[in-house]
Every structure is written in C-alpha cells, then in structure tokens.
Image 1 (cartoon, rainbow, N blue to C red):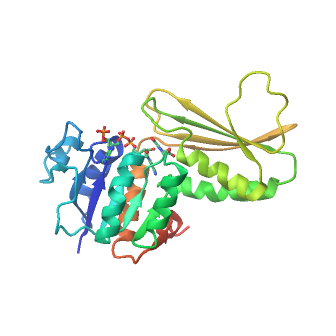
Image 2: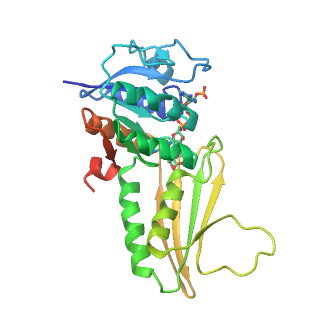
Amino acid sequence: MKTHIAINGACGRMGQRLVALAKDDPELEVVAAIDSATNALQGKDAGEVAGIGAIGVPIRYDIPLGLRVDSLIDFSAPVGTMAVLPVCVDRQIPIVVATTGHTDAQKAEIEAAAHMTAVLFAPNMSLVVNLLFKLVKLTAEALNGKGFDPEIVERHHRFKKDSPSGTAMRFAEIIKEVQGGSFVHGREGIIGERKPEEIGVHAVRGGDNVGEHTIIFTTIGETLELVHKGHNRDSYARGALLAAKYMANRPAGRYTMNDVLGL
Ligand SMILES: NC(=O)C1=CN([C@@H]2O[C@H](COP(=O)(O)OP(=O)(O)OC[C@H]3O[C@@H](n4cnc5c(N)ncnc54)[C@H](OP(=O)(O)O)[C@@H]3O)[C@@H](O)[C@H]2O)C=CC1
Ligand SMILES: O=C(O)C1=N[C@H](C(=O)O)C[C@H](O)C1
C-alpha cells in the first residue's frame, strides 16, 4: 500500500522538489499540497507548479476532512509549521518538520506535540549531513581541551530568510554539548582577542547556493575543516521522503533522522 503524504509549503523550492520526486516513487502518493492562504498559486495543480505536469492535487491551505494522510512533510516557514502542527495533533498525522528558524518557544511547542503524535524535527534531511553531525561530535571529543578554536561558516542562497541556518546551529550545539562554550555570531569592531570558549557561527548569503557548511577546528600551527556542499536540493528532498515513509503509522513520540537513516 502506498504511503499517502501531505506537503506543507508545496509551492516553495523544497515543496516543488518533493512533489516531483514523490511522483517517481511507486511507494508514495501526494494526496495534499498545502501552502499559505495568500499564495498566488492557490487552486493550481501541485504537479503543474512543480513543473512535472498535472497530478490531480490542487494547492490548498488546509487538509481536506476525511482524507487519509499517513504523514505530513513541512518545508514552509515557522508560521507554517505552527499552523499545521495542531492539525497533525488533532488528526493523529505523523509530522516531519524540516522547516528551520523557529523561536525557542515554537521549538518547545513542536517538542511537546511529540507527546500527542509522531514528530520528527530535523534541520537537515541529507544523509551525509546527518553523518557529518556524528563526525563533528567525534572531532569535538577528540580535540576537547587541546587548544582548538571551533568556528562554523555556512553559505546559502540570497532568498534564505533565517540566519544562521538550522544546520549550522545544530553543529554549534553539538560542539557546545561536548566542550561547553558560548556562541558568537559574526565579529565587528575592537572586540579584543578571541576567547577560548567561543564557538563562532557565521552566515554568508548570495546567489543560488543550496547550502554549504564548513566546521573549522583551528589552532596554532594547523587547521582541520569538515565540509559539506549541497549540489542541489534533492538530497534534502530524498531524505524527507524517506522520513515520511518511516513515520507513517508510528505512535506518538520524538523521532530523528538517525532513526530513519539507520545511523
Ligand atoms: N531540513 C532540511 O533538510 C531543509 C530545510 N529547509 C528549510 O525549509 C524551509 C523552506 O525552504 P524553501 O523551500 O527554500 O523556502 P521557500 O520560501 O521557497 O518555500 C516556503 C513555502 O512555504 C510557504 N508558506 C509560508 N507560510 C506558510 C504557511 N503559513 N502555511 C503553509 N505554507 C506557507 C511559502 O509560501 P509564500 O511564498 O506564499 O509565503 C512558500 O511557498 C526553510 O525554513 C528552510 O530553511 C530547506 C532545505 C532543507
Ligand atoms: O534554506 C535552505 O536552503 C536550507 N536550510 C536548512 C538550514 O537552515 O539548515 C538546510 C539546508 O542547509 C538548506
């Protein structure tokens, strides 16, 4: 039986790739394509919006009542996640939250929803980025107390609304969990020498970059850099579709991409 998925943010850059890749997957069927009520593409066919031809699913701002939805993937905006989250709770729809940029209060609401429905909340759906989370933890552990300065540089397209990226902040949190420290976002002026406890996080914006993260561990005499460069958005989309299949029919609880990817 196919997994019936709903996509929140279906008109966006990621939403369109999900619609396109799901069409080629015999295990998946897109049954609902949701976007903001004000989006000019409301009512258009989601397949046409994604450039793959009609799939018979119109863009809507809600999930039709009575429709079987096995899991919902959210690549929208923080306000979009918060709009769809209570619907998923009410209707017991497992939700994959891939959107980034939520406030701490919004993050707490998403975590709390996991007591009522199945929730996977991850800033990056790519297999190798999730592997890199592990490599950065290993590196932070190996270099802890040895005089290395951690700094993170992320690069994204000019259209990205949140900064720093959710992924960059996850790398920073992993280092902090191992080494302690405090985040420094950019530097300007006569700020004095770098303090050993600093974890620098820096955002570059421009062009059509789909996402690059460089995690730097540098000391007097040598530097180690761990780098991921996305080539297109499909690595994120494929991970999210895998997650949607994994989440279908799961009981309430908090799930991770490590569960999905077997990492
Ligand atoms: N976890 C991961 O692996 C990845 C996460 N992301 C994150 O996913 C999110 C989306 O990225 P991207 O596709 O590039 O962004 P886009 O801006 O291209 O798409 C977002 C879509 O969501 C829509 N939207 C806005 N508000 C709502 C709402 N209230 N309800 C439903 N839909 C809404 C937007 O509509 P409108 O234009 O009308 O506002 C737009 O169509 C970002 O937070 C990004 O950081 C991106 C890539 C990978
Ligand atoms: O907005 C994007 O494009 C991306 N956002 C995610 C993030 O903020 O970490 C993941 C990826 O880097 C692409």
